[in-house]
Length: 279
Image (cartoon, rainbow, N blue to C red; front, side, top):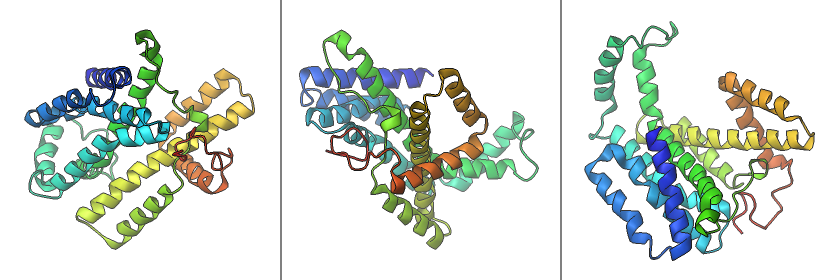
């Protein structure tokens, strides 16, 4: 929790500072923590937060859309994910060695007890390591999104305005990302294991989560259009949380279909209020 709060604070502070004093002046302060993180790799997420805020500020300063700002701010997350992917499939962090060292440690604390009979602790650890790069990217993407919201909320108190973020019910992915999904699916079928397979698996994870968020945006838009009462909307969200295993797949399917059907009629708009529209 401390790392999350600290990361959000640093993202917001850098974004507000760059808006007030200019992105060029804040470039060096944004890079210093990242350079220091080389000596403390496990603090990389926290140390990259200023760079995340600065990258978003550069896009805002150029007059680009909210989607472009978040896409740029997610670059450190993509870098971390690729580094982890290369390490896990290389000699730096061999997956087999990590599994052999983690499984006995987890068995000692009784982690194996609540697992289903069809899943072993070793398989669970292997799965966690396989999707670690994608999870790392999504974590830093979340920091970028929430940090931008914090900067938008507290910016006026420091005499700085941060352009409003896109409301969830109007949020939409770039339509061209469907090609990234197709490429990842093709790689997953062509490569059984190795670096390419790992890249495909993590790419599918990231895209599935993003399309699930788009599906959630469609659901929120529909509830607003139907004027669903607030407590019923909260119940819907609670149901989605309790059935997360199924609901994520369902929402991802809805988000994917929205790419073609465009139920909210956002695809034709060109004023930059959706992630899918860069201008």
